[in-house]
Image 1 (tube, helix red, strand yellow):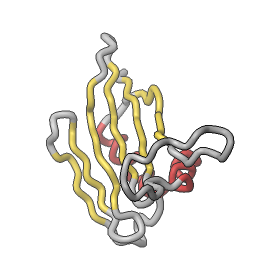
Image 2 (cartoon, helix red, strand yellow):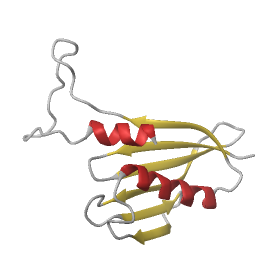
Image 3 (cartoon, one colour):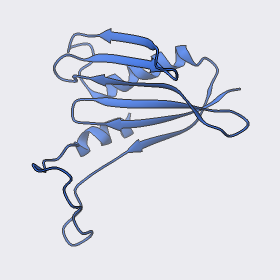
Image 4 (cartoon, one colour):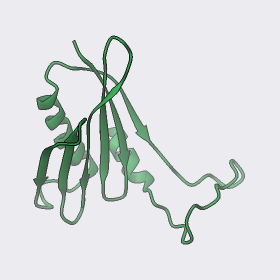
Length: 129
């Protein structure tokens, strides 16, 4: 049975993901990469396989895919069809949040206009799904 890893990254209006195959030799390789973008406005799923070929490009009405949880359901359905019988060996999720005052020193901003590029609520919505 093929093993795969799923990596997620939720933004305020997007959900990006990558799938890595984990063969017996341990040499992971990208199997799919994609995102649902435009959550709340014009949701669209775009996915490419490990060689960069498009395997999905789907647009929905906002009422069909309005949340990160719904986007994750759509991604999961696509991945189940694409990797039938694969064993999900692990899931990783990138979570970024501003440090609490006095707990960790603030990171140096990497851009001139440091605004939160990430919504913690979005990340928690995906984790709870």
